Image 1 (tube, rainbow, N blue to C red):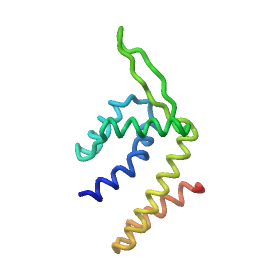
Image 2 (image 1 turned 30 degrees about the horizontal axis):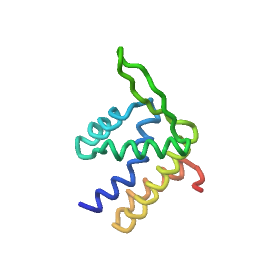
Image 3 (image 1 turned 60 degrees about the vertical axis):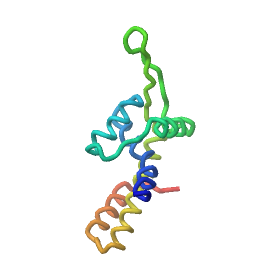
Length: 127
């Protein structure tokens, strides 16, 4: 299970960006989306989440802003920037290439061809 945990940690950044591509979210919403969309099988700890959000903000992939909620509560929302959209596509390409190669090794050529097609359709250069 250790390898599975490492793989999940490596994909968390990509998944957070995926969630932010459609709407601005605050931290708790992101953690709940992980649980909900994975059927409770994949979750991210808040400490890990905020470290990733900080890193994405520092690199200019996302921005954050505070929004008043009710009388005394404030929430920090995260917004994906154009630079983050390109970075997300690069991460997605990397992920699909890994899946393609693993599928070929496992003899699952139909799956491998699907991943290769996705990368080709995105048509972006990975630097």
